[in-house]
Each structure stands twice: as C-alpha cells, then as structure tokens.
Amino acid sequence: MKRHVAGALVGVAALLVPLLVSASPANGSVTGKVQVTRMGKPLADASGVVVYAVGFEQPPATTVPTLLQKGAQFLPQMVAITAGQKIDFPNMDKFFHNVFSLSKARSFDLGQYKKGSSKQKAFPRTGIVEVYCNIHPKMNATILVLPNRAFAFTTADGSFTLKDVPPGAWSVFAYSRRAPRPVRANNVAVVAGKKTVLSGLLIDETKLDFAHRNKYGEAYKARSSGY
Image (cartoon, rainbow, N blue to C red; front, side):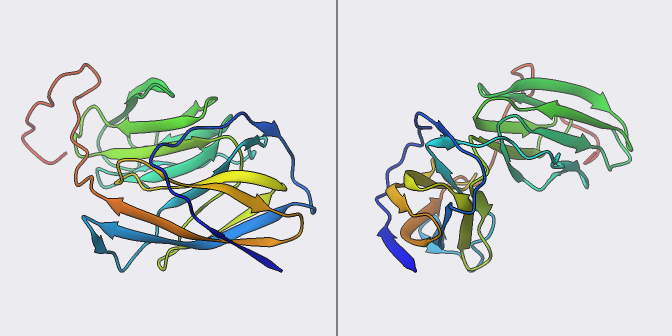
C-alpha cells in the first residue's frame, strides 16, 4: 500500500527535537523523485542530491566512508553520514594534500600528508561540514552529518527511497551542495510496513563555484603548476 504526500517546501533546514529509534521490521519507507534545475533550467542528470528525514535519532553505522583525494580533487564531492561516524581521508595522489574545515559543525585540520597516507576524523554533531585542501584551492567537498540512517542519494532520474523510517510524521529534506539551502516537506506521514510516496521536491542549483580562503583566512598563493 502506498501513501501520497505533496511536499510543502520551505527554505531552511532545522533539526527537530529527536526521538531515539532503532531498526525494526515495523518501520516504513519514503520514496519519490526530486526535480533538479540549475539556474532555472532542468538537468538531465538529477543524481547526487541527498534526501533525508529528521525528527528522530538512530545509532551510526559501523562502516567508515571514504573521501578520496585523487586527481587534485575530493571524490565524491558530497558524503552523507550519521552523527558519530568517522570518515577516512586517503591521499591517492603523488603529491601532498591537506584536509581542513572551518565549519561550525566540525572544525578540523588534518595537516599535510603524502601519497599512500590516510587520516580519519569523527563527526559527533549534526550539520553541514565544508571541506577544503589548504594547498589546492579548487579542491572542495561537503559532508552532511545527519541524526539517523534514513537518507539516500538520488539516481539520475531523481528517484530516491528512504528505508527503515519509523512510524510518525517527519520532515523530509532534499539537499544539493550547489543549492543555497535544502528544500523541505513537512509532516510526511510514515506508517509501519507501508510505503509513502513523496512529491513536490524541487531544487534549483544557483551556486556555480566554491571560492574560499585558506585555513588562515588568506587568499591562496599562485602556484607554478596545477599541483
């Protein structure tokens, strides 16, 4: 049985007072599609948007996701995790990299390290963490730290499915790192053992670059080569 919900969209993501829940066969799911435009024009590929539910907490997975440094870029450019998880930052390039963030949700500096080396960082609090390299100004990535495991990335046609969502009325967000803010559907009703179909999630990506200063708040120095 499916339940259909029209997305009531607002522009500000706020994590609600959480309820602690665990995985259960009595939980439900939320499925649907996100429409993605860039500067108002529809994108043929709507993959890479994170859709997530808030209002309850779940313990983090025991896995450690990887954010590669390869080809003078971070791969992937967006990672979603549950609060309490760690991320591994291996350097796969033949030159040094640095990983740092000045974000309020998690400020850190892993320093410089060479090819074949890797460092880990834990992310105990929810929020958006923007990550950069202090050596290469074009390197950037986003870590989305969420209160539970009910999140998923969209496929090329914008489809998503949030699994193992506890019964209740939750807020569901869709987030693209190129959009100024997430979009939100309020009071998405989830019923045990049922599938809720969500419509009306539309994201317009207007952020065309990720210009920033280095970890000292200074402009990056010009380099003699791309590396």
